[in-house]
Length: 167
Ligand code: DQA
Image (cartoon, rainbow, N blue to C red; front, top):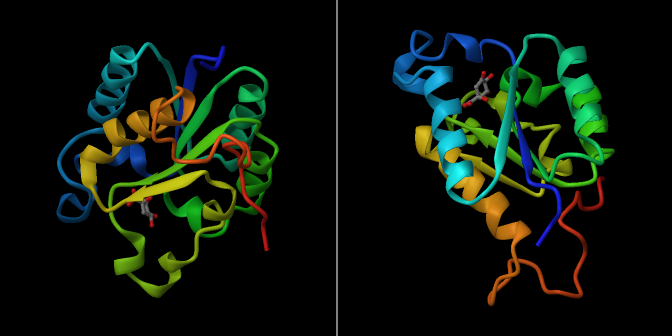
């Protein structure tokens, strides 16, 4: 079992408007609802949750730096930063834990500019298109990757649960 038990949940720009913003795309739950659901899911498996929402790329990069050596995992919905924020890519590449990229919608079913994720190459895995269910699923994924399991996602001799090679 990993000694680190804290998950950092990060949200990028405009996600503070969830509940009001394009509810037909993102649903009617607020950011506070999603954070509460993630925190409850984390508590059920003995994990602590910290969270930050910011429209500032530098604030998110600083939060990722602050998680190094301290947090077991980062769950990040980068909002539109997903598609172009290379500084967030680089910060996550330097994070020594699990990274779950999370989206409420499925960006690959939407406009072409949303089809590129600069976060995906440094994510352990991505959850997208499952709406509010994505939050407890992301926490479950972190838990599953942290705990010894009879049918592990990765073979015991395989690479650590960090980023794979980046093109
Ligand atoms: C989003 C998808 C992004 O393309 C968009 O810019 C967002 C939200 C999602 O959760 O579906 O702000 O990350």
